[in-house]
Length: 212
Image (cartoon, rainbow, N blue to C red; front, side, top):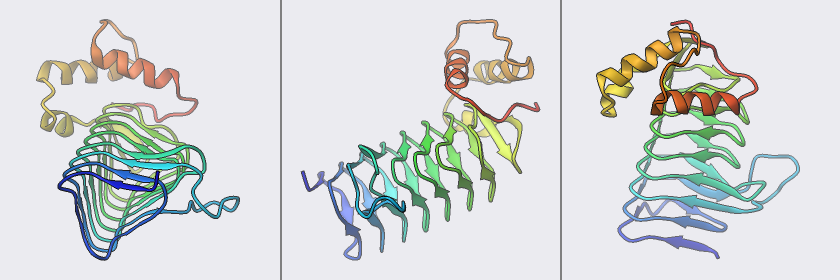
């Protein structure tokens, strides 16, 4: 399919875009961003699938998005990807994610909606970051991070209250999320946040456990 770019997307003249890449509308792609070069994988010298980038994203200077070894590398809509960050092959980044300066996502990483990845964090290949989770600055992540968690120095220290408040989650639901975790995953109600936690953990083999 080649390169396709939607309406009102602004692309700096220094940007490199290659491969089978689709970019949506109203994006702002800054100086020296590289999209669509081959995966950093010894068995592949070029992408083996597509890159899809949604709408209303900001991609800052020198950030990079590599093509997949499988079918897809994808960025959703409403994301802010800061300078020098790297999104590796086969990563899936959902909507409204913040990826701070010099963050590195290894191959096959999945970042769920409204997650916030702090400056200089490194995410090990195949790890998943749950929705509304926050990863502290410089933190190495080597297993899955449950939804709503705040990870600091490799420890699930508390829920991401500030991020939840900024996203418009009610105080009642925020307290319910805290209670779900502080109760040792003993769920009491069939509510959206408990269902999200249960689904995420049911698909995880190894994850950070709460100390809240």
